[in-house]
Length: 235
Image (cartoon, rainbow, N blue to C red; front, top):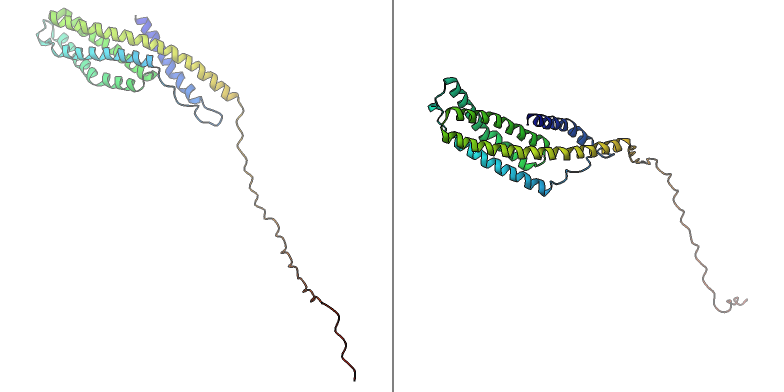
């Protein structure tokens, strides 16, 4: 179990280190981003909602059962009681603050690699610390305390296991996306850049044309009608 957890953690660190630069480089020839992220599939959202619903119910039960513990009545040494109390306080702070915040972030981005890895690490930390509290309750606490905490432990392990399987599928999908982005970046980097459009500005003033001369029209002589006038008589 520990080996598979380490493999999953290393895989996600690798994806976080490589996927972001590749996505940033996926631009067209003009330097603009190639487009928005595709919508998340309904099946993926439905799967995540089922896991988170189970996790939230388990978290509520954990808070209730931790609040009912009477560690001061345990027949244990002072160091064990103090350590268990510190673990309980740490778990309660996580359940009231860090866990709900991460769940809200994941609801807004169901397939975000960074947020998914953040939640998985948080569940790992809760599992380890809560396991120590359950073990101490089994050794020094009442039967009711151990039984209720044991049920919470089973619910936490179930949600953690389901989310781990989702992480593996998400990692496989991101590797496919990473391969596509690398090919796209390689194609775009090999393509010649689009030359900028040239704008020619003609600032030379054309020569002015001489003004056209006005044509002078001569008046036409009056038209003559009939015989010419006779000469006056001589004396």
